[in-house]
Image (tube, rainbow, N blue to C red; front, side, top):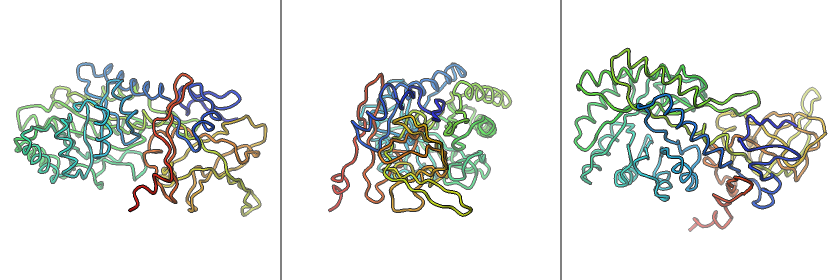
Length: 441
């Protein structure tokens, strides 16, 4: 048995089978069907609180906001949880904004992102009174200014700055080197030109700069270089306008452990390092420390959720050289976890419904889709006696699992279940075939 508590949610345990917050895997599948996303509610809230506590501790009066990066996972109940712990939320589309507004999330704690916001999305944000819009292009500066003016409003904005840092992460999730679709380049002077344009617009109020250097980052070195470069832009603003911008958002991207032996970023540790970096760099250029905000998403949602699958078939495949690989097919696949196909992301799994005394064999967990690339875990040692009807648990699927889910092959998307103190409830119901047909004309 290879249950590793460090990569499961805080309230997961294994006795004769896996339990999450006091509810067994077998009970969850029996009551809610399979496959299933299971969210440890107390763990989710605790992780959100840990970032707020660490930000307040290390930045004190200079602490800004913790914005939950809702692209990791969002529905109305998650928005309520985020509101209940007193942090903000960042949204990157009109749909994500609609979810937050549907539960009366305080608009002043909403920050709006996106590299191609439509005019309808901008208008919705302006009318809602969101705390800030992070502008991402010169077209967007004009659009936000014009729409805000049409409603006789002054809209607070940040500028997204690309500081030229290529974080140690997968190419497709590195977001702050020069050759990306996001933000205004610092090196080319575009960021300064954006500042000048915003300052010329009476319906816009520039309140700060924003920088996000990537995802799955495990040390503060990249944040440090980015902070140094963005703070130099804050100093240039001070020198030119004889004023100081009050806020700096350093984004998110804090890494989490997916496999045994890996370690997640500790909120207290990384915020402590960031505080030292920001304090030093602001001192070097002689500006006041601005209010510092951050945007953890995966680091809050990721480890809190486990996907449960039911095994449908198994087969042994003879490989060149005489070796054998065991294929274990489950009732989900890349429609509920796109990351292995998209990023070559690695995951772990355990047999969840019983203890096996059988020896482990080289195994590959695959989905049920009509694609050879439908692989959840390419290589893992699992008990030889795994058979149809067994339950497999894949931890750390709270970030981007359900959020990236699709209906390829017309599969219905799984339900999401929240568990706390021995109780389980649906927070996103399972799709039905009627749902798939409902949009057809």
